[in-house]
Image 1 (cartoon, rainbow, N blue to C red):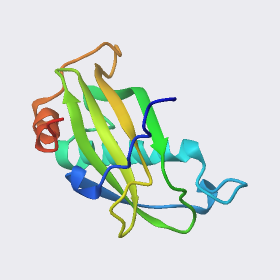
Image 2 (cartoon, rainbow, N blue to C red):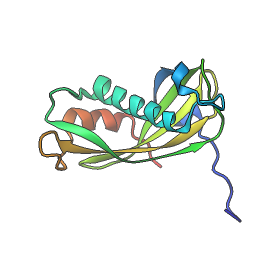
Image 3 (tube, rainbow, N blue to C red):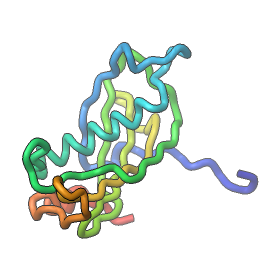
Image 4 (tube, rainbow, N blue to C red):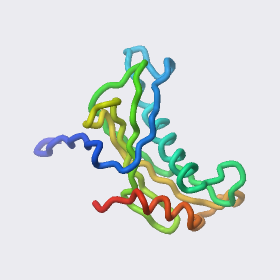
Length: 149
């Protein structure tokens, strides 16, 4: 990374929607902090919370479901148990069948992200697993947290 500056953590104001998450005892690793793979479960929790609560996604019987096809994360500050977090969610890109979320994890009461990344859902037909247009209710919900980058 010679000649490149390190990316800076996002601010809470960069995210229009938040989901509270509490770390769990099992999230810590032997080094005493939340293991890197656990951050992705927080991402998944926030995105699906929004889709279910705000977009009406029927995870048990709906014809269309979202599958994760890509994710990434940058880590800025360690997290640990016990800790209350706020997971910020926004839509960075929205297509007919896919959405790219921007997601950041904040310690409760802090403005600078401890971690941030992206998470991509492709919507597919539940039975065939072939790409499908997202339902209008999901699209409308995702439009509400879309940001102009």
